[in-house]
Length: 303
Length: 239
Image 1 (spheres, rainbow over the protein chains, first blue to last red):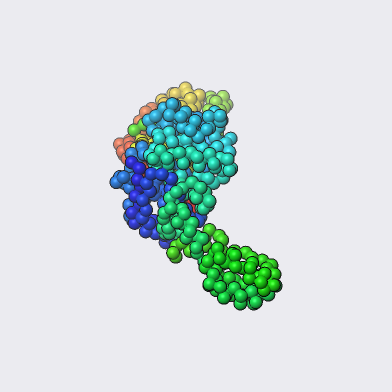
Image 2: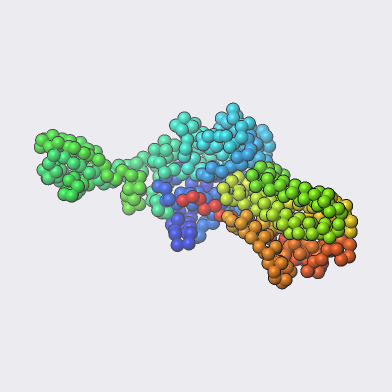
């Protein structure tokens, strides 16, 4: 039980389409579900975890429907994004309760707590835990039954760098054991560090899929936009447009700046300072105007 | 049909919340009130009927039912922690029915038993009044728990909806509109109390057979709906 199939899945809430005709296959290893906030990542993960019915399409785990199938949870472990847990319990009691609900006992609970290195605080109430500690106890609760599929919704939110690295090591190890690990994130660097395979969703659509290097290349090869202010905008514009690394230059008179679209990222970054020096032009500002993740994504969707 | 882990989590959550104070305060108030009435006016059957019928059965039982019934499931659905129960190879009906049993247990403990104690304090169970109202409270506890558990699964405002039902429908409309009394858990329970108590001491607007059928029917229907609701519970995420 290791491969999740999402086939032509759409999900809408009233008039809002949250997920739009997405098909993907999530197999063993670590997969990152990447997308800006509001892209539909949580909706997808909720459908994969059986907490939301697809409006159309099917979500199956090795041929078995996930929705309304309690037995599927023998194979799936879920780490929800929401913070709420049974705060009045201690960490140990919480993980133990989760083990019992799987028909397991104290030994399995203890092993899961050891896996996430939470034994030192296991007898404290969950209400006293930091965000990172909560996250690890949530992990332990999802690992008690050694699931073959682990779904994590934004697991790194609120973690400090050390906790982040620890969790990444744990997820890497689980992926290496042949388990299917899927986690969502809106931060490219997180996904890049952990997942060899990336699924990108933007505005409810499946925008890209594959090796992170391939996706990285798509991101660096896209047209880059810059806002440049200099001592002589028009002279600089005239010199730059002659080079094939620029595709368009607008002289923004009101702002007193140039808006440059570069098609060859590497060549342009080398060209700009050289041209400025040769023409005796002083560069006052060079700033990328669309480095936000959303613009990267919107490019990927178009690609 | 019953899972002890779900039960343990449910009652610890129920009794650990601040709202649980009402669970202790209302019965304590009833018992203190009964002791005072007995000390000031002596044992009197009509007074016992007034206190047990007017305060215990009409107000205390539904209020405790609201707190236990909605509290057994509503907050977990609201804050999302119900995921930890649902993401388990456990029938949703088992989860719902376990929670219902806990809610019934808590409501009976905090309403029927204090009603019995208060009845003995008021008139020493003369005319079977204490037992009659305690049984009525226990039976009403079952129906209220099922109704309010269902409310907890369908609306985020279960406590408000429950209070409106308990106070406005059962108390206010029941007193103003005679027809409304036929559709009142309180009157159904009273029909049973009427049967147990000595002739003429307790009266209900509903016949006993009708009352029993309605009590059983409403409890079963509410439970079934709650199970169905939990089976397709949707967690939409926060996006």
